[in-house]
Length: 521
Image (cartoon, rainbow, N blue to C red):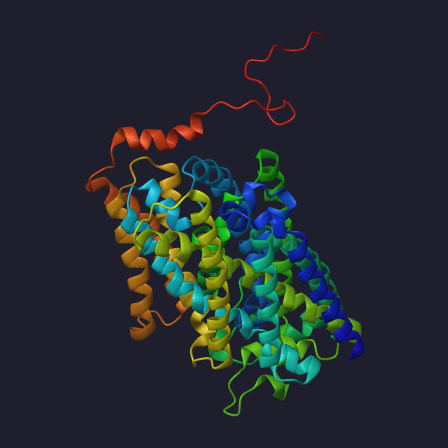
């Protein structure tokens, strides 16, 4: 117990220390929200990765999908790395940084408002973010309950209150830079932690080959496996179609999440884009791939009463903690810090995004304009963001302390609504001049409407698959509606896209000159 407590005390001390060290970077709105657009590759890449993977993934999703799909759930982690990280950086990274800087846009709703010349779009996007980021924030705590009960035998409510309070302190102190510097530290812990946990769990089950052999002999849930032998060790698992839906939601979904895309706003330079792409992808392969690979061996524990409810159904959130029960004490301490790191990094990114969006894109847009000087106005905005940050954390804690019965599904609904509404308009808005304002409205309405309707009517049983449908449909809706609706003024759109045509000078090691003469023999 002493070792575990020491791990926690050191961890929390480092977090607060970083908040104090970076507080000078948060004296302006752009500094507080984007770190002055001066984040290097390591900070941006780890900020992106740690915001991506929370305790929901490590405890909830890894256990649930590992139980359902076996080792084929590793494909989810691979999809997260290739689609959610590599392609996201390649397709969105540079263009997002260039256009948002050109438009002086600080948030995703701000981008929609300025790109499509619509204050109403900006307010609508802010409302969608506010409504669906709160339940997402609450879901971050869910993965902690059984882990802390296993490690400390204490009520997890104490843990989430302490975690929320400490996150609140360092984000209020240092804003974006405190968040990404802490993300770097937390990301390193996650990399080492997941590697050590996988090695130890497999060793406890006789090694990789022995564990795989035992898993292949599982005969439980025959309706799921359709009578297949060794379904849980097969290449695509027992249910490839639903597995594909999970990959789409958890991978493509990041392209439309405000807290994820916002990391691209703050990239420092071209070198940071290229290095960040590589670092972020490797991080996702190790952390996401490792989490789902570990979860793939969940069926090895199917006889353990700790993972079942009284009615005999499986408690997915208890699977990973049960796998970790027999780890050495020091490794349990590492796992606790690992899950806290994953949770606090995601939590800090979410509440910073929520508070800045509501302040800049909602309150500032609907309140009466006053003739106050810029310095005074910025000071007011900073105070408002910090107060709202406390509010969002308090609300998420209250929801987590008394969670509704469907809280475990809220992450799927939140991702579906946010990415379903934002992904397609943002992507097409970056690349296609002919994207129209009305197409964005239609996508907003469809993404949110479809998700909410499915929550109650359940015409698609899985919220994961429903979210995947909204995202893919949005990519089709936006161009189709744009072809038949009024275009924005050509000169205005040309002015927005002119940022991509500006000439820059780079060193030859980053770009070869065109028509360069060949060297003489």
